[in-house]
Length: 611
Image (spheres, helix red, strand yellow):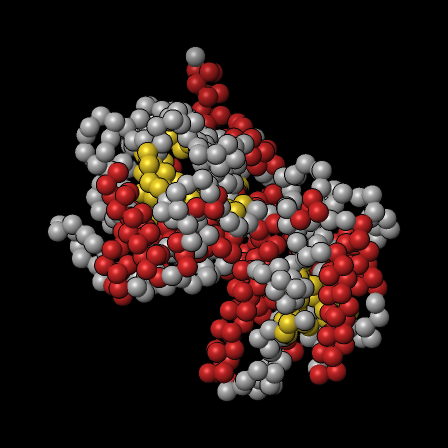
């Protein structure tokens, strides 16, 4: 026994002199885990295992990893409690389930639904986004395209889609809801000319859609969801529609032609929704928690500068806090996410003096398209004479020009995918021939650039790269960056002089991956969508920002050499705003030198040239 006690005492003494080695782990890993959660990936457990496996000197028997550094936060998530943005208690919401038009016009429609939400004393749930579409059944959060406070800047209270999901899944009773469809008369011409307002008593409650291709990602159930681990982008919104029949509103014919017609239609919409809240299947009088909107009007019906509409929107119950007309703001295009704004500014700054062209070719007859190409060449030569410093022609178009520049010799038998989904079906061999001849034409010192050309010549700053790595769609590149940093720390322990070389190599590698992600790929129109391809809505936003900030801007005459486009109109409005700003700042008008500006793309600036 004495021998055993001595042996144990010796072992204890020895242990005191042993320095226990714990695995050392940077806070970066925790940020990656948070990013995985926020990016709505459903394989987070796999990612955790992978990170722990690849962390330096980690073994299961070592216990918990030690956090060795706590870098400053790059972002602050909003609270999952939406009550701060609820105009009344309990919270009531309005969701933009389906919008009938793409990104540029969809902004106007979201603003209209925001005004409608104010009139109904509800909070607007920000839509999801994907491929230039906005709605509740899409992949990415609103802030992938826009600044999160875009609607708040216009006086409209909002919460994010993720916050709404969090709220809905934590309620003790399933939130109640009603489907509401607002559709333009021309879509259902059999409707009486004065329009119609009716309850849909024929659609079963479990269909939850007015049309098969207009999905809201809804489930009608009487029990709260128990699947709390499903990512929000793939989780259906569980709501209870049992007591509220769908409400269908069809506009009068030609309702948007004059102000009185618009105001009358707006009054009918608001009053019909208010009154519908009092009609339920059970005879009970209460408002549903959620209004899910199928919105397919083409023009605004609520004018926030109209006195009649102001009074209609701001009507409140006596117990509610009174609102003032000046709280309603007219529509302004949403501010795009900072990452895309900074990227576009960097591209413009690094590109020689350029003329940007937006050319919508869809619905233009081939023979007319050929004439427009010839007139474009004449106009470009004239511009070069007026602006000798002009070097680059940047063309943004719905025609897939990357096919021509990719070196594909025969496009005649190729079914290509256009930048517009509907245009892909009508591209012909003649389209390819016209574009080939255009690009092969000798324009002296002028050089054609495509979106891919701009990305290829771009040098991303380390600061901009860091910002890219915070965007959820670049999560895989961020993980590559993390693994390279881990590897560098291991190398640094043995080779101090290799540190700067490795940092430079890593920077170049990450920059290459980001630029590759942004590059438009040559693809067949029959190819399946690949997960790794960039969202085309993002490309459209970047192009819009480049064309808004470039030296000169051109577009075809509407309905002659180009399709009438809200995309083009937004660019012109943005350029007009820049002209106003520069006039105040530099007292410089169109086509004049801006004093003290080194960037050639800001020395000469026009509003728009038509050809």
